[in-house]
Length: 399
Picture 1 (cartoon, helix red, strand yellow):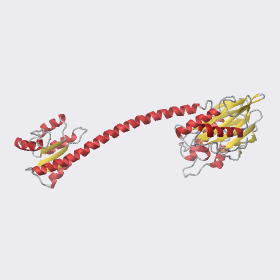
Picture 2 (cartoon, rainbow, N blue to C red):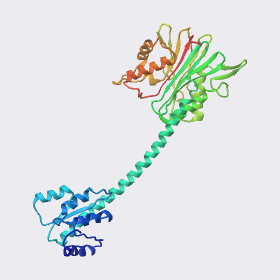
Picture 3 (cartoon, rainbow, N blue to C red):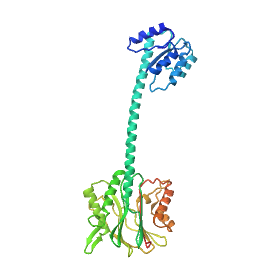
Picture 4 (cartoon, rainbow, N blue to C red):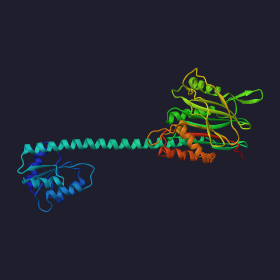
């Protein structure tokens, strides 16, 4: 209660104390301002006309003080002009009471102030809770982001060697998830000193679940022994390649019986005889394997086939092809062939053939990097909507 009249302060204070309020009073705006700096005041009743600092000036100074709580301000005045009311509202007053005070009206105005303050406290509590929740969520997201970055690094480490040269040819691999982690994987392994397995597969969906299944399946195509790699069997003379169609069948059986997931996998697998250039292959729902000839022309291989992990009795048919020196085999994911331009048109086989003809003079990692640049140019950005992966074998591009 701020008023230069002590009698007026005592009258108002007596009525407020009877209603359970704790009342502080000041004889001037300066004294009230100092009081508000040390006491957590909820509501102010201030006379307008006081010597020194007026009620208007006190209200303006109070609103400029830093505070984490709202103070409800009622001006007591004998002024009734609209301009005076507008001036009071403009500096931050919430309500007005005419002097001399009517106790019933005073109670009603204070009740209104209490309702406003109750809502302000509730909002302040909700804001504090929201801020705390947001801080916790931010910490959680930061932790998840760190985990996903580490998961990305771990997934990329599955490509133990991205470029490998043999006397007979050169293998290059490229893997670009659309998010932190993805469902694509490419790789190669040794079956015998002259035979290499080259694969590309794509787990349906995106994110952590697809990445975990990708890691599990890549383990089926790693190692150089039959007990480590489903593409290797044991013959009379030692390790030998299992027919590619049987590789798809074995992966299908493992997915349906052991992994028990609702996701499926597309697969392109090639067994490469590096001395002769002979290819034994299987295509299971993956984009068609590509042979680029020495003159830059393109041949798409395979007839599609079912994805792996859908049907228990699914069957695949292998096929063979022959590479000539100077030719190359390319396995790509549907993140390449189905990459859309800004209007939604997919690149498709024709678009991919056009790009490969254009890049015919490049090889190895340079070819794959240039292909990614051309794909980004087609899409309009490097943020591809799907994982992108490529596995390349160039025959006769040896050491």
